[in-house]
Image 1 (cartoon, rainbow, N blue to C red):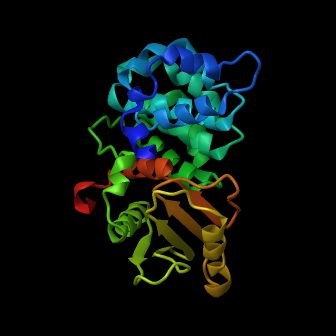
Image 2 (spheres, rainbow, N blue to C red; image 1 turned 90 degrees about the vertical axis):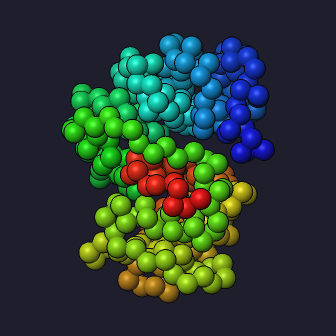
Length: 281
């Protein structure tokens, strides 16, 4: 169902007016269905949503809900990456989210502003290269380079469905290629039963153990705890990263030494770093 929604969102949002009415509900209680549908639509928004960029989407950048703010950013990033002219006036609304309390929302805003090549936001974006979130750091590095070089060349855009076209072994190679592009030397480990790690990434004295989960189902606490346990076995490891093609359950939380990267964020980074799709599908 998730893949169908991501690929054909227009089948589920026949009347965007109704969706936005629910998201802007006056009683301040956003219906769960509208919240979830909006996050799915953000994966591959239909062209019709360009009609709602001003003011509906810009208003949602100030929404109290992290998921809705982040999804609005992702929609704007999508259109900025495909047709920059449709969202050129959205930069002001996005800039304040670079200081959002949620680091993932910061990353989504950074992605959109990078596509917009917004020089005004460059200083703040550079500061996000020191973020606690690797996703946000990586997007900030990409956005900084894009703004400074003014490169508007056509990039390889990864979509959520592309991740599921990879076999599990290929998915691990995709993850390794991404970390290599981000400056790490990487090694894909031999396949073992769940509980180990799939990619060993090193950069100088820093060592990261990466668990790559090419799953349709959401990743839960058990998997994250097992991966975190590697820090006690591999004592020279600085942190672990759990990467999934899907998402995480609500009970999963990141820490200073445990990072989480879901399918949406992975596609963002693969696109930002121009990792080729054809080699892995």
